Length: 468
Image (cartoon, rainbow, N blue to C red):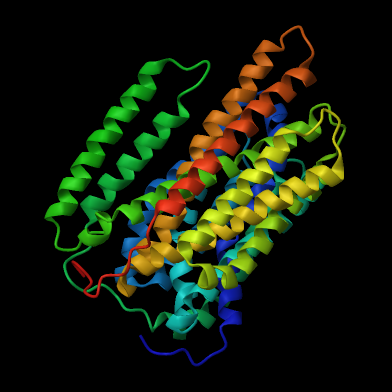
């Protein structure tokens, strides 16, 4: 891999802008109550706005990352931006809830394409010894978009109602697409996988396995019969079994066998799922605390959620120095503990909102998440060969996806149960009870992630690219 000769920051800005379509989706969280009211939905139905989109990109991302390892990260990245512009326009124009969910699925495909190769493109913009700094910068740019998202989302909601939280991203995507020529020289440095053919059938099996398992998770909860979830779990398990068998016989597996068998590699990825699962409780449920009886406006709610994203920005930026100084294991453990402390603080919020206390807890939780995400991404990239950066970047994003889907199911299910118990009673008190259950559960999950991260001895990249 040759040394880059151009400044990295313009290219990082383009990659960050294109990948911002994911953190900018936090703007949709601000509009959850408005979407719920617009389509006359029960509380737990709104989770399908998140689950439908996340399920699609989560199931496709690893396959798209493997595809980028072979045909080029920039080609896959550009395709995602083009499709993304169309998807956001379709979401904003949705006349019904079913239309909105279908458009969100299209958005999921676009995100899978874009995000699968974005971290790999970021690492190509710098020398290899600066890889952690590049991942930190990428994480910071993602977090910066998360800071802007709830603020812009609140403004778009006040100006254009709920369609505004989708419409404002169309020009963002088009601007990123216009900047992709700057990435061409860095993209030419990519070390592509050359051994064996791209395993399209294996990618489909993987997508089916992840998709069915995530869908089964989403179908668990009050009001759902157990049989659909069980059927999805069986279908996902079968597809996963077939995928594993195919990978073992493949000359070009997604993961080198030595890495796939490494206990530390497995533990850090499970820890990542737990941290994301726990952390998603904050942007998902805080709007309900503020808007349902809290007396806050959508704009004010968006500003407070921006504090959480600002914490993620600060944590991601600090991780550029923390990870090399502490090592991925210690940095990941520290991040998970910080996230747990912030969640415990949120669990203790009083019934009447107090801005300074809320801001401090959200800032701490976000900072812990930011540190952990960079440490996890660096651990995964370090464990895989340079020709598998697409898979490496995708894997760190898939862990986030699993956490978000499971979190959307469990956390909103708990709030729905609180609403049910409040029938004929005091809804605000029931909401506070539900929120306390959510955040104490999230605290325990984050502490569990810290314990796993501490036990995860880092894997080193194979000297030979198995199957490449």
